[in-house]
Length: 153
Image (cartoon, rainbow, N blue to C red; front, side, top):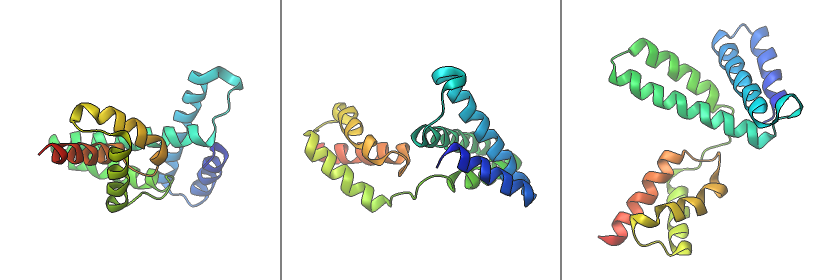
């Protein structure tokens, strides 16, 4: 997914008068522009990997917001955030199943020789470059923690 792909999606959403998608894509393009400025100023063009990184960051922020709004009994805001999240998720690569992730976690624990939860960083460092964009980091972290905890039980 490139920045120009997102700009084209924005044009299509505007023609379709899809207000939620227009709003989300504008916010996303703004975040990408900010990222470009932080990286190198006017001459820097975001790569597909940069765009994916920004989308993942926005997805994480929306998930966090949903949790906070649920805690605060703000159903109206939860609904809005979930609608925006569903638009954002369409721009992420297909996500891996939990079963596939579990196999990768098992292999990573074996490869790194991790034994305790103190080795969690080693396992995550090994795993994340291979699954970037294909799995939620929170889920991966939980699976690694469960694996290391059960290995010591």
